[in-house]
Structures are given as C-alpha cells and as structure tokens.
Image (tube, rainbow, N blue to C red; front, side, top):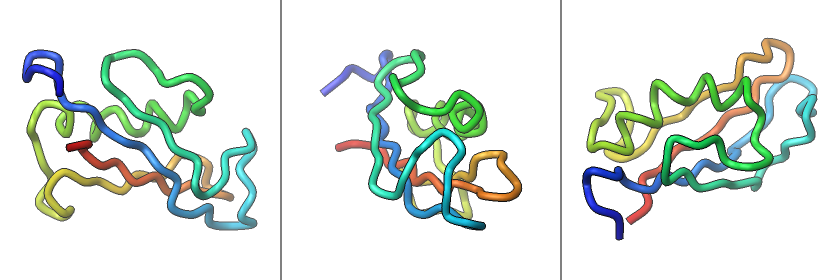
Length: 92
C-alpha cells in the first residue's frame, strides 16, 4: 500500500461505449488500467484521460463526489458520437 503523500491507486475500467459502440482508438468494455502516479497509463486515450483528471486526483488523495459512491466516479470521454464510459475506483 502506498503512503498518503503518494496518493491511492485508482483503477480505471470501461463500463460501456454508447452511440455506435465503437471507440475511435479501439478501447472496449472490460479494458482496464491502474493509476498510481501523475503519469498517463500506457495505452489509454489521451483525450479520455484528460477528461478523467478532475476526478482522478481527488480520488487519489481522499476526496469524493456527493453524486457518486464513496471512492468511485463515472466519467465519459469527450467523443459526442460514441462516448466511452469509464468507472474510476479507489483500489484498496
């Protein structure tokens, strides 16, 4: 387990792809990554990761969102035709 100064690990998983169900960079439901630093995980879409940052950092450092379950957040990528829905979960 990491020390609080380094932040918690957060798992990123794809829940669904709306629209046509096709992601332009090839992501698919079930794809997953872990974040344990400020570095972008290999293989994840940069646009999607940028949309997640305002949710990732609070989760990594103990924050939460009143509209979400504790330690979780749902985030969509910015593709308006085929939004990819990501679930962020603090790893225990």
